[in-house]
Length: 196
Image (tube, rainbow, N blue to C red; front, side):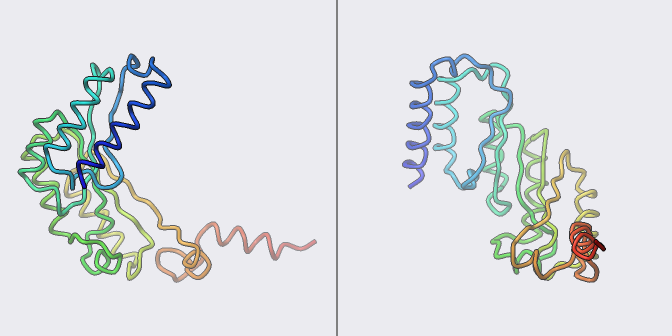
């Protein structure tokens, strides 16, 4: 299965090179391996993918960034990825609360997140980014605050905090705390009751 995924990626890149040959000469600034959780790839397939891109594109100034699933970011995998020239890693913790992570249907737990950061430091990654989401099921303002404090303790190079936007929640929820309207809801309410 993984071989086919890499084969398809390389085939698509070849189509782009055929259609726009000058793409091969444009210096790549940052090459991101995202989507589909590339940390689940066997190291040999990851190496094959990178070999193709380094051979066919201008990687003379490129930095390489990999997105992963926390539970798959083991020390052996991250060490191998570092040897392949990947210097940046990012992953979605979503939260550091095991209850919130579980209710979000994720496979990892908070300990996996802490170990992923620790492993990335040992493997020599120079840039570690973690994604947190607020507005998740069972998440309170206090839990969001704790997530931010834990992220600060990890001394990350980069942190992304994103609000979850699901239509059913947007209509029924009021803010992270569900206790008062959020700013966008206040504006809508003010407009709808404004006198003529």
